[in-house]
Image (tube, rainbow, N blue to C red; front, side):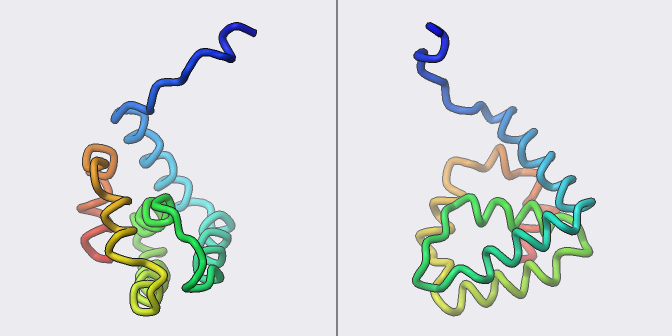
Amino acid sequence: LMLLSLPRSPPSSASSCLMVESLSRGFAHRSDLTSTLLKSIKDTPSTGYHPPADIWLLACCASAPHNRPKVKSIFKSKASNGGFTSQLLRQSLSGNGVALTSLFGASLCDL
């Protein structure tokens, strides 16, 4: 019971890297997860809220070549209609370079 009240430390770069790698592999092999993610992001209205995690998840999804065209289409659509703003991109990427390193060569640069 006492352990539950202790503050949690923020995730380390190593744990964030592992999380990104796990998500990327999951999206590569689970079309049901990919479809659900893409539908959820696509169906969020441009006036709706997109957290930085949406950018991370799209990048993880796009790391699989067979998902990249769909992700790219949604990303461009959201960017053009104001759903993805420059502020959101800064929030998503700022200070997260280590965790996202594996995605830059695989997907982020293509988006």
